[in-house]
Image (cartoon, rainbow, N blue to C red; front, side, top):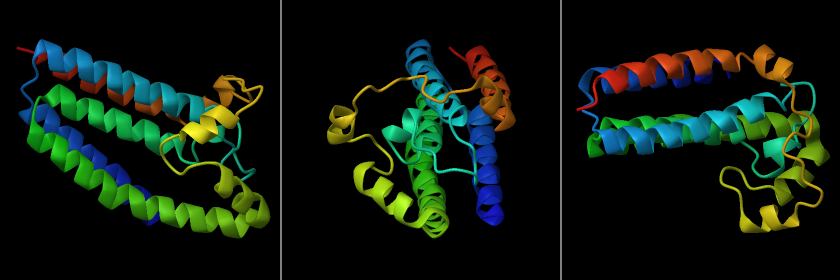
Length: 179
């Protein structure tokens, strides 16, 4: 798992470096991409504030809608940055990199969770989609609370502030490149 995490991080760093150096954003691509990036980071922060990694099976907050909201948020962040770059090559590269890095990660994590939480995870897996929320999962939620089990301290402990800082720097640099 640590090996996959390193690959995921370094691949992301390389992608963002290429975008920072080669992107030629325009005002429209910047604003559309910015909205998508901030939406992704909102999802990540919400998920990071609801999960207690390796302690309990997260089933509250965004985990009631999808099993991998942190990765869904990361997908939107990368997608938004690719849109800001105003390059179909970066967009295609991002999608291919994301699929090749995150799909194996998701499969390994699901195997780990199935072994650790057995029946509880299998029941959860039956009702919640892996990546994008299904209409069924959205409609089936009763008494859904957006803030259920959310904690800013937990988001901080899960180091989500590092993503906020990195995004701030990336967005500022790309903002300076807008033509």
